[in-house]
Image (tube, rainbow, N blue to C red):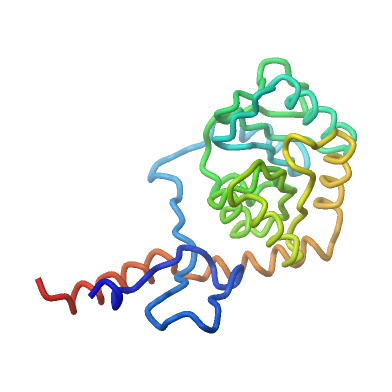
Amino acid sequence: QAWNSPTLYGFSPSVLPAPSDWPPNHHVTGYWFLDEPPGWQPSPALINFLESGPPPVYVGFGSMDTQEPARMTSLVVNALAASGQRGVLASGWGGLDAESLPETIFPIHEIPHSWLFPKMAALVHHGGMGTTAAGLRSGIPSVILPVGGDQPFWADRIQRLGVGIRSAGYFRITAKRLAADIARAVGNMALRGNAAALGEKIRVERGVERAVELAQKCLSTMKW
């Protein structure tokens, strides 16, 4: 019975199609997104920042332990300045320093990616599956600085799809390299067009609904 039960994969077939030799009970359903809770509102200060200039670049590394938060914060500040971009800096678990930022960079702690990412010019992150998925759905190019785990895979995948840039690894990145990659993500029209087109495909997928349908179908045929 277990062998006949469906196996569900919560990623987009537009990003990673199912191999042709998979058994029929293995399903790529689309991403399982968790959107902002009902009634959630951003801070007035963030709204004012977004409306005060061109779309900024999001920079955040989620649950990654940055180990040297002061150094990485300085690197990000310098890279954004060199690329001529404003920024939104997420402190994350690594505690990037939000106390001494220039006026062109707005600090945040936690915020729904589904709300923020579509408002950005580009996204700089570690390449975790959830952040990568949110970036792909937004239709905004990503610059990925992988740390470990599955992150190099997703960084390579977005580059192969032509929707983002696999940059140097997190612990090898320089301000000069990051500035160049940010400038490309913001200014390369082919990259931006590809990202927007893939985002449109992902936004019409029903990943959660499809997974629930398959699970219910399996449960309805099981003998208890």
